[in-house]
Image 1: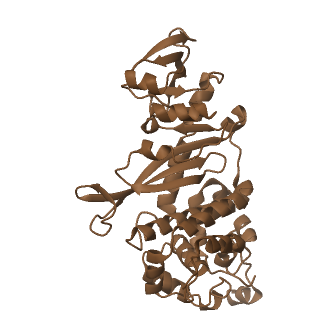
Image 2 (image 1 turned 90 degrees about the vertical axis):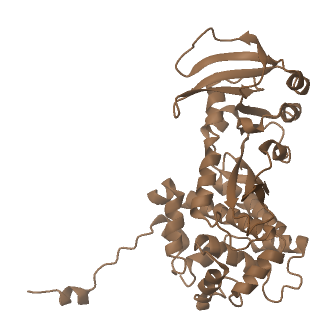
Image 3 (image 1 turned 90 degrees about the horizontal axis):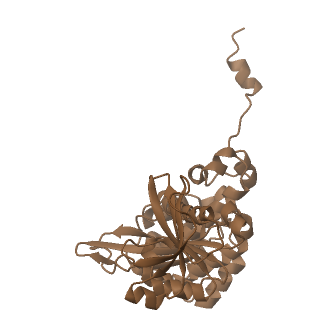
Length: 391
């Protein structure tokens, strides 16, 4: 193999998708050598190599002089060039590259989950995560009086555990304000926490044929219309009721019947009051679907631990957005490789794959053979045998 693992990993990025996004946004106008592809390679290298600054990106790529042509780059960018591009090149081009790649690679990252297979509907999980920032450096990211931060509002496809929607706001923006920005496909299922419980939003979902599973807020007034279980049914389900909202505002926003299922959460030893507009599922299915929400917590954990997402190499809002979307692209590539790998460590843990890849970025070995067998067992030569022969 004459090209490095990094080159083969970047080979998964369809250049036609990049070209289409560049053409749409005109991001290569007045580029002067540092085009969108070079910028993309620089940022993906930042994430997988865990580079902490523009200087480390520039020096890391410059050290791979013989491999730059294989990466599609004429020369390594300087630190000032990377910084300038992060500040001025539109972040939307990287969003479109991600969405295009997701559509292209999605069939190979799909893993139909048992809950989704049982109910035969597409399941989407919505949640947000907050990333703290220094207010002195990121003065546009107001959160509190002496603290800055941004919030990533994310919708995850449960089959691929990859985001199909990401919206970045200041950390002080409430989750419910960003919830309606995602266009939920008709017939799909939305799973989200009680922070998104706005009955006007839930009524809009119901009117478009979307089923939802969420937690009921403790201050919501309601009355039971019908009860399916008398008392405690078992150790998993406590009650299953059809309810009607009785609060003045809530009943006006959502006048229809809802279903309230109380199930036990063994991980925290508590009872969860789950709200849904689907009357035909079993109580167990409702509980399992809400359990599936943990997939997005795992995704946020992987994003923050494996990629350069908690600290940023640029302080402008555009630079932060670029770093976010390029992190999504790298996560997509890692998930694709994990799905294709046969090695047990890579199959069980994405962090193992990311760390092994980081250590072997410029090693020239076949990517797919390496994914299946990352350890190369060298056989001792005859010369080595003669050297230690004491007979």
